[in-house]
Length: 178
Length: 383
Image 1 (spheres, rainbow over the protein chains, first blue to last red):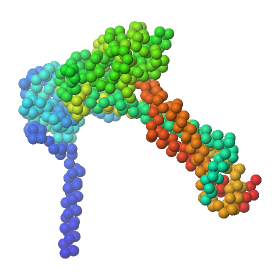
Image 2 (cartoon, helix red, strand yellow):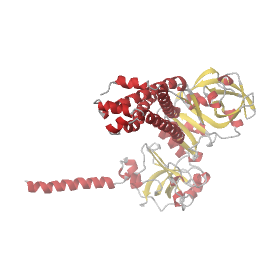
Image 3 (cartoon, one colour):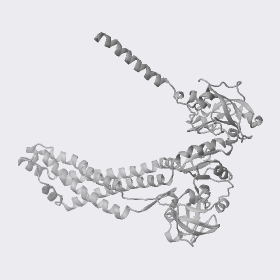
Image 4 (cartoon, helix red, strand yellow):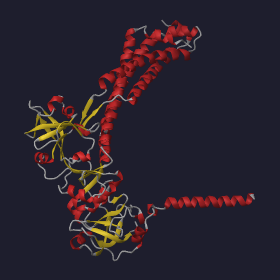
């Protein structure tokens, strides 16, 4: 009996530890997302993605476009409890930490760039429900989506978009691995 | 064990020394109570000034200072229509367009004082329900309404800001139309004028901020979402409570300074007390040795000396508490963004008592140990 109990104990300890390791290693992406959000993150964006700055000039409400950028352009690019984030054009905006000797604690706010340029080089990416309302769930952490992540998004240009405001109802989001 | 009456009798052996000990400890306790009271008062007024239900929209990048923020006039209307969960009373939504401006006001005798001015509309009263007009009326063009503590912030007599008096702002004479109260908040130190007047005086065509009141603090996400969906307005949403919490952190060095000053003076007084007690106890070495020869242990003698000194310090602490209640309690202290009232709360009183006790204990130990340290034969021969 004693001989049997030792391996059982060892196996139990191993399983317990490996579960702990798995939990510790799993990034915040493991957060529970709704089916709609999971679907958007599992869909593959169409194409490699256009420049956000250029899309501001050409995109019209109803157009389906694919954009590529980084999560930046605001001090708080995510809204807690809402499926929305700000995508910035890395060709036009600079995350301050890429500047030499810049120890900015919030490089995603692109505070070194003029506010007009930030307006023209950012897009608001939202995941909406059937009624077109932004989902009431946060998406920071889903599939590794975080501040300064490189993201490709496909979606429809939403109503209310203009030359200074580009709103995208996302249908596919891909987060590039760091 | 020596009876407590021995310590009490000894206390009055030297009246000058007693006065010195009582006076010194009273000063230290009073300082500590003042420091605690200032810290508590400043924190209390700043935390009470911000409601978690109020959201401030400022221009992106100006989250640190509302006065520096500039947002388009139309933002208030757009926010009013777009943000859900705004409190509504009698069909009026609680959305206040404001200009915050700091400038000098001038009195009839030429004296000038820096004032915090807020340009508002009547909707502000829906956003700040704690505001009550306690005299006069809401300002019309060419008029101003003053907080009931504004006189303290400006360093003038209360009568100089009573309704009907005149104050010049940027060379323009303005009538004080009324006085408002907003208990326990920094608003009470402000001067409110109409938004139109302040727009002209501050020479600006933008607002400093738009403040809205939500029915449920959890709806803050809606306000934040609005700023993201209207990136073209370049707005940033802040919980009013967070804004004032940030100001509380900003004023922390000031509060630390009050502690440092109190600490420095207290340590000066403590060392003074050491000196007095060293002198007093050194003359009692033979007395202590005699008591030891009679059979009293060093421990009971030390306890008696501590009792004696603690009693003196507690008399000082009591005196300080009485002074604090009559002199500090209710006194208004101005600071850069408003004024706060000192209050001798149970916490402040308890801090005073603990300080008095600690002074008695810590201040006595080194001189008492030195007094009891010599060997009995040597101590008995001491002159």
